[in-house]
Image (cartoon, rainbow, N blue to C red; front, side, top):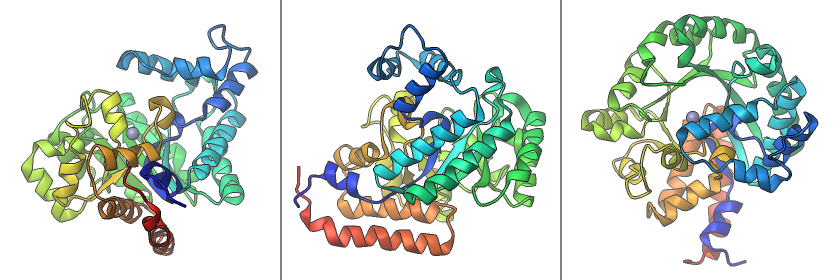
Length: 346
Ligand SMILES: [Zn+2]
């Protein structure tokens, strides 16, 4: 079968390591929830819901984010949402993902964060059994509630550490809450055996990435694209091979860069940094992991061997076991050997 790049990339086994479950729900499932909780006069169909997720600007994005959170009211809503998301990802040939979830963002709904953690664990187990997709969860501890809350949250989630919940992440406002405030929380998480990753270098420049590395010893950098502004940092990231979890569509939609030409992915890649490609909040941003790969090909002008390299980077940067990594690399390599010749230029 002859395939164009789009068809090829959809069929290709994919891995992603920067995804927020809270931004990856399926529209079909959210529509079920809207109806379950008495509907919304604005939303009469899935098409209306799709329109609702076209954002005018960043404040509108945040407003819509909290609007959809209101329809998550019982633990079963979280479990089903995650399960359906993983089912959809498996359909897109995503074989492994590391996903953030934010159990403390639903105070208004009154669901206990520990119930949300348990619901997500159940969903991950069921999805692996039913669709053979592996998912590891990273609990997002937002910067915005300050350092004290962060330590409480680490304590609250520690009993859940295990096969499904493997790490803690630091998200939220980079400007107002610098990484160094969370140093002891990260070091404690490390001591307890969690993986630990921080968003940095997205809204704030290189100093934020330096702090994530030096203060938090972050194992990977969420986004990290603004590292490009500091040659010394670029060199450091290259030598240390600290993975960057790059999310191109997200960066355009949130206005970090105004278009693909301005985006530094290709430059970071060609300088030899360990860059990976991810979808961040696919439903919120109206994109998929296949879209991100298509952008690498069409706009970033990466060659096919380079795209395969990015795929292997993502597997290597994951927190999967050595056996799992070997298995995934074999799967990817087998796909390329079997299919690369069927690819046409357009
Ligand atoms: Zn993110």
